[in-house]
Length: 116
View 1 (tube, helix red, strand yellow):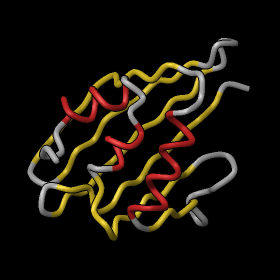
View 2 (cartoon, one colour):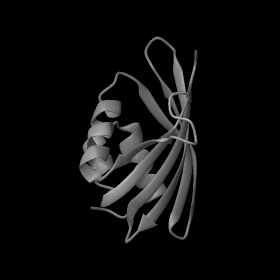
View 3 (tube, helix red, strand yellow):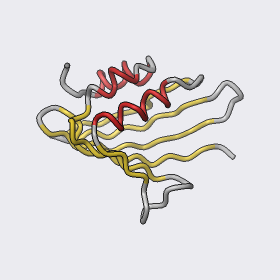
View 4 (cartoon, one colour):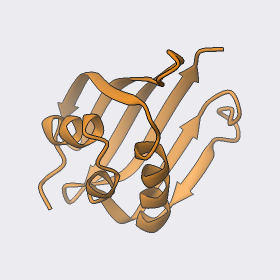
C-alpha cells in the first residue's frame, strides 16, 4: 500500500474507492465522528481496520460526489476539508484531522454537518 498522502487520499476519496481508502488505516486505527447525532462529549467511535472499512463501504457506496477542498500535511499529521453532494442537492461538509503512525492513519477526528 502506498504511503498516506494528501494526493493519495484525494484520489481515493473523490473516486469513491472505499476499499482502497480503508487500506490507508492501521489495523488498530480509531475514527471519531462528531456531528448533530454525535456531540463532542460522545463522538461516534469506530475502532479497527475492519469496522472502518465497513464504514467507508457504506459512505462510498452512496450516490453522491466527494470533493477534497484542501489539505495540509506536517510531519505525522494531515488535515483536510471535504464537500459532498447528494443527487437531490443536499450537501455534507467535513473537516478531518489525521494522525499517522508508520505511514498509516492511526487516529482520525472528523467533524461533519449536513444541509437541513
